Length: 503
Image (cartoon, rainbow, N blue to C red):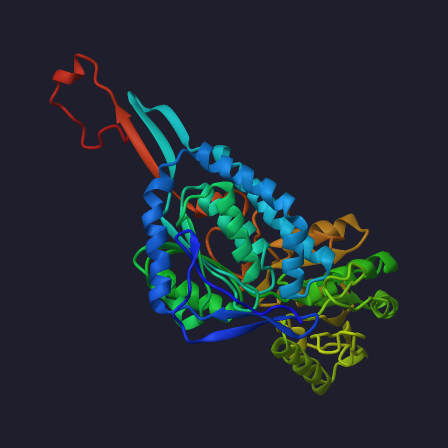
């Protein structure tokens, strides 16, 4: 049995013993064993984390961006050096298979590499003689203390790829509220940041319930909130924090659809769907849980998906031959089981049932097999709501136009995909889909970190997305300076225009 660790929050450069009496259990999903006890930090500890970040901000924000970037260069080297250790942590606490867990860490590295571009992407603009004799310069300055609220499904990528690197590269400090189910990866990363030379207080990490996290939403010293999680919580965070005058980006739920046209190559399309639907056990907002299949290809496609899905090897996360690992915990597994039963009750056709899965030697793990529903009709909630598990729904349509309408009727719009060899339909799809990240024969159209993670509709609340140039804009504010120097004649003048150079 694995050692059960009692975790500690990270405040002002050190792990501190929490004074809480409330602890939650974190599990190894592959075995079902408890591996850590996670503190529900007290309100006072959350306040101390904010105070630590506030105290660190003046020194860190005045550190030249080149010096900040040098620490990120060192951090990138440490991520590479500790790749296997970090991969194991993600696999152990989340349940992703080894390749997926390594990808989680590689995405943290990618976000760090993007943040290293701060020396260029923090540059402003300037114009000499914007008005005669008046020069104008725009600078980008850090906001102050920011807060990040992290979900369980990407314990490395989201806190240490999406949130932290660009935030601190821009000169801000941050308080992270780690996910109670999967906090260990972030806590290990912050140790590496200290080894890389990051000053104390720049990053602080707490674990707590929604009650204590609520402090961050209205705290007068917090300037911005970045959040990834459910739409219900994201909307609350956006409305509450924005009303308190804070900048907010809330990345929320999805129900991504793929339109498969009659001319799509069946085997390759099915393989792409399998990867997108069942990768990370479906626990990602860019999963592909719904296929909208044109009638002419639907029967062949469903049969091929079922055939390939039956061949997926289910097993523990750290077995490198595993293709489908467990879901994060038993409560989430039960939620998915309830959704499968709901699909049956609603009348969808259960083509492949993944409920009765046992992995030899790991009988207590939180496993589910690939599940497929066909003939999912309008109004069936299983086809419209996010399940966050290895469940695929197939909706059937007659035409491209009908399929596009079905997809755009979805209240979420993170990603949308089309599988076709027809350039005309592909172009029409790209132009008219509501999805913010679009794939043409690409099942998971997540762009590299130089572009924003661009969800739309109820998948995102805010104005500036994470990553890419949007990320640098989100974590900075503009300051525009207009300068006028007097020559000898003007220095004696008392005639100043009302508009003073602005016209």
